[in-house]
Image (cartoon, rainbow, N blue to C red; front, side, top):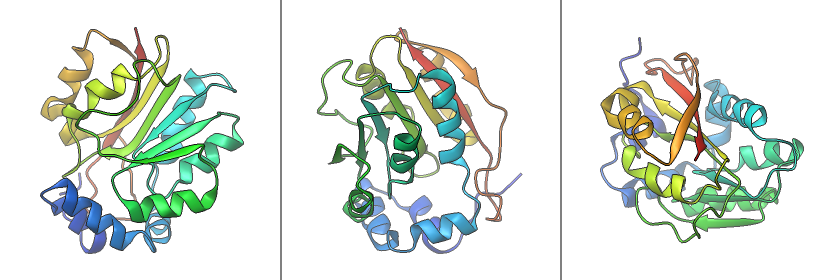
Length: 207
C-alpha cells in the first residue's frame, strides 16, 4: 500500500491547508495538469464515467461534474450523450482549461464543503471524481451534493480509502437521503505515481 507521500504539484496540493491555498496551487498547475496526470495513469475519471453510464441512461441531464478540473469528463460525458453538463471547481485556472474545451453548458467557481447556489433536486445526476481525497474535501461536502440531486438520480463519487474509513462511509451510508447501490473494490488511482494510497468508487441513489 502507498504511503501517501508525493513530490511536485501533487504533493503540494495534498499538503495545502486552506481552500484558497489549494485553488492557488491548482491555478499554477493547470497548464501541465493533463499531461502529468496522463503520465501517472490517472483512473478516477474513467472509473467514474463507467459507473455513471451504468446507473444513468443516455440523455440524462442536467449532470453536474463537481470538481471538474480541466474538464476531461465534460468531453467524455458529451460523447456518451449526457446533456447538458455543468461543472464546478475552486480553481479559476482549471476552469479556464475546462472552458476552452467547450463541453460545458455552464461552469461555476465554487468550493465543495459549504452551501452551493443550486436549487433542491437541480441535477439529474452528480459525478465527483478526485475530490474526496487527501487535503481536499471530506464528508462535509456530501450534504449539498445530495440536496441538489434529483430523486432517483445517482451520485457517483471516488473516495480515498483513508477518507472513506475516516468518517466518509458512515456519513454517506447514514444519510437518510441516499441509498448506496454500488461500491467498487479498492484500486490505485495513479499507478504511475509511487506512494499513491488506494481509493474506491461508490454510487449512491437519491431517495
